[in-house]
Length: 125
Image (cartoon, rainbow, N blue to C red; front, side, top):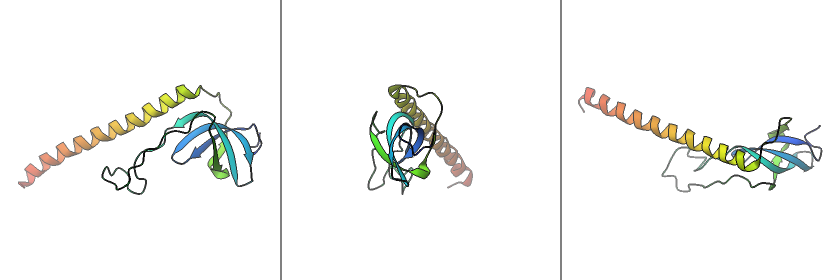
């Protein structure tokens, strides 16, 4: 089924998240999608200053709600033909994956700081 057709199931990127949803309508260049599942949780913080905890405006981004309707660019949607898992389950999985990614980044930064402290000693600084 064409992604522009009402009732089509699509995978769509919206803001910094990714969702499975149902096409409600289309104006040709955009598709109105009813959210059914979360694949990727939206990114937190300032997108113009990634990974900067001191950015002047640190955004909190929540995932779109179950059955929330969002307009997405037609180019940001593609047909989806897999099973649609329960929204709450996908929200929990996507949130957990985002938190795990950030925890891994935090642990990487801590190891870098440890290594740099050792290198500083080698430099006798």
